[in-house]
Length: 462
Ligand code: BGC
Image 1 (spheres, protein in one colour):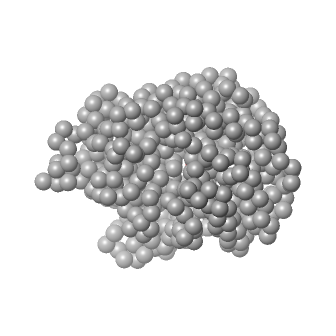
Image 2: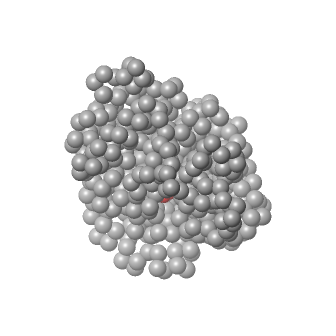
Image 3: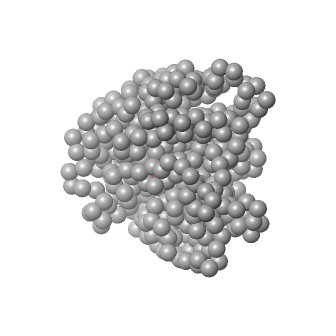
């Protein structure tokens, strides 16, 4: 008898009672550009006018009442956590000038989250920097640790009711995209700059950690990392295995190692994964543009697509890679893990139900193995600005017409609602009700059975 059969005869997977479900946004991605904000990303978008069309206003969370409505929808789904971020470029649009109206607006949002019976998880930096910081060298600036500390001290004092903080979102992505591959500001394209910027980010986190703990010793503080834990295409090849571990280490774990001493938990943003082929003949220095295909295959490698459905980004849907990532994080660090993001660009909601269901089964399996996963926070609450892709990629539980602002809850959100409200996954019922098409239903069944046995998928044979 395998583990799964021992656990549930009736195919209902039960989450622990203290396990919370939530959804996530980042300020810059949902606020639109109304109000006072001066960010490096505003300049970047201005210099690249093809990214956002003139009449696309975004989800407009800066307008009173708009964020509130979406938050109410999330609470109605039974969600108990809302991840948001506070935008430094609004709080301090000019060096030394604090915009108290901006603080007020964020206070309204935080209050609303509490009043709906949810708790906030607040990110202090989600990629974006104030323009004045960018002018001084962004994360390379010798003063950034000091400036960031000042901002964090202010925010923590202004929001004593917030107990869960993320100091940084995806330092690995910020650095690789902004300092190496050139797809995000500040487009530095220099390995030395990347090293300097990384060091400052790590120092900024460490200082912020102590600042928050001094203000509130009970606060829980961590970093959200982007984990794309790739696997060797041919696990019996020691060189390929070594190469894959190396790229995983330098792409991701290196940052975790540097900050683990000042982390109460690990924030895990998980989207996809690939198999890596080591191939010294394929030396290249040209990077693919989207962040999940970015520097991993550098310099001697090639990606191999797993046999899986893909998102609108082309990212394979691989919940077993999430299970594998959770194993690695747990065995390496033994800290509580929060899934701080997990989601899919899926304009027509074709695979989102499949995605949520199978990833939550992976989380359940990890819990069952004793891995301390605390929360699952879906990305994203609403369709939003997907950075250099503009509004073309749709990650929302709520669909948003970026021109009129009209909202519509996607059908897959109701699958999430059923799981969040009951704290259970009723596999057969959910597949039958929410997974579209016989083939996809069958695939969901197959993937779930494998996950429940703890089996990892194999590469496609060539
Ligand atoms: C980022 C989000 C982004 C999402 C989808 C995450 O890595 O934190 O800002 O929208 O991925 O690409």
